Amino acid sequence: MSGSVAVRRICSDDAELLRSIRLAALANDPQAFARTHDEESILEAGEWRFKAKAWADGREEATFFASIHGEVVGLVGAHRLGPATGVELVSMWVSPSVRGHGVGAALVSAVVEWADGDTIELWVMRGNGAAEALYERCGFSVTRDVQALESDPCRDEIRMRRSE
Image 1: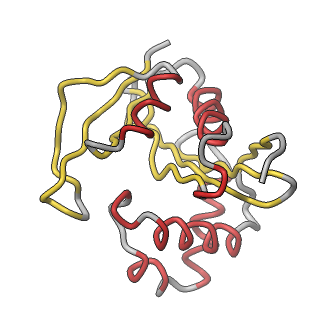
Image 2: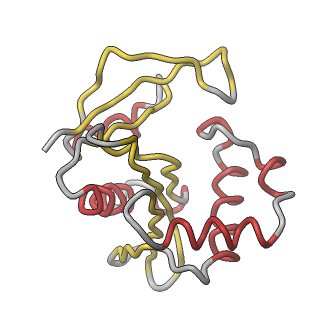
């Protein structure tokens, strides 16, 4: 699939689409997320509606969808870490069929715009060279911070940071 990438913040009525894309991400790349497909597949519709509403409005947290030709092919989340401490980019996922076609960069750009000049941090699994390279192209630098991956404590993730 090729074409131009469109990115938009989710809407409060995107609960079912959010569920669908999030579960696809968890099924496709389970090692990349703190939660599992099994954990999230049992969430009730009301929980997905709550998430969509919370992430659609306000300045504390946001989720963005990327689409090509109207098909959602990626998502990313972000939340503020606290007063004067910046933003954390989380749960980035791009469908394998469009990786390397600018979708990830477009999603990062949406978070950068939403962060409005605040420092942005993220954690990336050590050894995920493609993701690390994407984030470096988007202005992130590797820090010295390392932690165990929550979903697999035998693997590490490294923190990256982007300052305006």
